Length: 153
Image 1: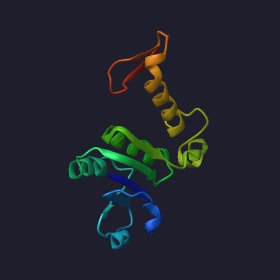
Image 2 (image 1 turned 30 degrees about the vertical axis):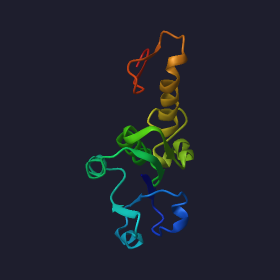
Image 3 (image 1 turned 90 degrees about the horizontal axis):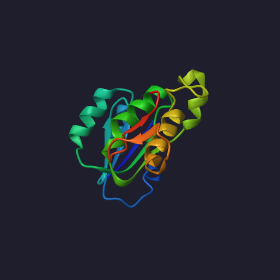
Image 4 (image 1 turned 90 degrees about the vertical axis):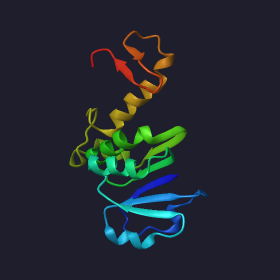
């Protein structure tokens, strides 16, 4: 299953470029329901709301193949989405978050080296994934599902 979050309010076939049996588009605008068709489902919700994602994972419990966050640009929206959905991706699947440049913009709750930005969260995830290869005592893997402890955190 392929999930696309969009804020374009005009879902088109170009937003579903892969040959997949099913897609789920997510938008905050209820008018986007008009773009549902066979194999394409549109779910209306606020990506910055953890309760929305909790319900989404109950409604769609299967592991996801591809998840593309092309939605909101604030750190809250990107972080809530990532924290809610990353663990729903199957092994070997893809999680993509677009518009990470806003991690450096204060008006989107970002800033250089700001710990809540998606860039900094991504750096931590990269360390986590690669911790198996580290010889540093301060970087240890605690489980197979990429839970990483860095000394001092």
